Length: 408
Image 1 (tube, rainbow, N blue to C red):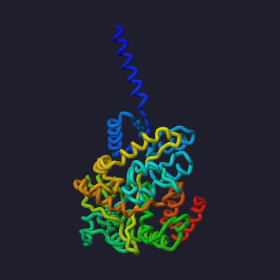
Image 2: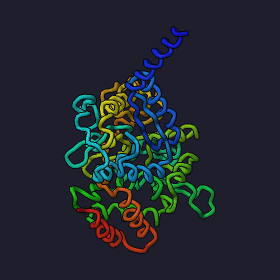
Image 3: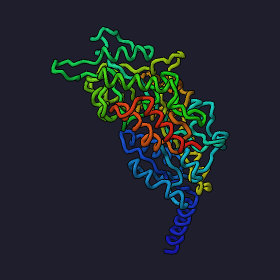
Image 4: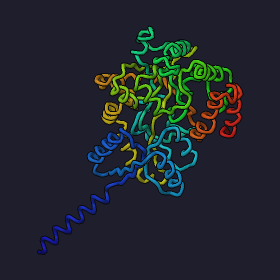
């Protein structure tokens, strides 16, 4: 009996010792979609391979995530680490609730192995506040069958002049009822990536640059007028669709050209659409400038005692093995540039998006009020023009005035 008690005590002490050595990392993010299982896959594999660290992940809808995260961090609570859209990074860094992690790149992940624009997006002012989680970029999707029917061949437009020319030719009333039912170039305003930025870059324009407001300058006004005129007069796109409706139009063969991310690829492929993916058409300077997005991982400033454990997880997430696994299963390009293309030979679209990502920019990069600027300034400006409430110049002049309050 005494021996049983003795060995029971030994086992209990060993259990307590192991438990005491295990660092628990709480991790919040909003990956509720199809990629959720692959996020869970990486976390589970990390936990299996690291007996001294346990990542406890809580996944919630993005709106709930952002409602909870900043208030929690501001009072010294919240998760140890969080994954968020990189466009929100500056807001959290500016609020002083996340830790800067410059040393992570010195000791765990070489910045030389990341796309330069991605590493730069992890920075706020003169410090680095995040590790990459996912890299997203927009591809130019085009329906090859509709191109062939219109006598346009199977190659995408080379420049924006050609894009608008193609858009007019591809916009049709196929049933003869007087209503357009095939659109040349669909352009959702809301619930969609910031494609307006791609259009503005397509004419060498800018919205903001180095703290200066550029949205009402000639290049931006000219290209937004060109787009909205084509939507109003040539009917190349319906006005009021959102991103989901845009996806449905392209997947049903009723739209010929469309900007979207790698997440849309499986839907279009499963729909049986014969399509291609390319970089954005070249601007007058001969450059293809594409939209970049993605998510980043941050460390709670009150969890610095768990910094080493967090860094190990960030490193594991960005390892070649994890990135290959996530990319193959989700279609997203890897966060690293040193993974051989041959790793994705069975899914060539990943290499296509990786190449596009090297020519990508983040819209409104480093602006803490990114989301508010888009919802309260950019979207209303586009709608005023489309609904003839103002000319392009008048509407973008108003947008420039409204942007003043966001620029320090």
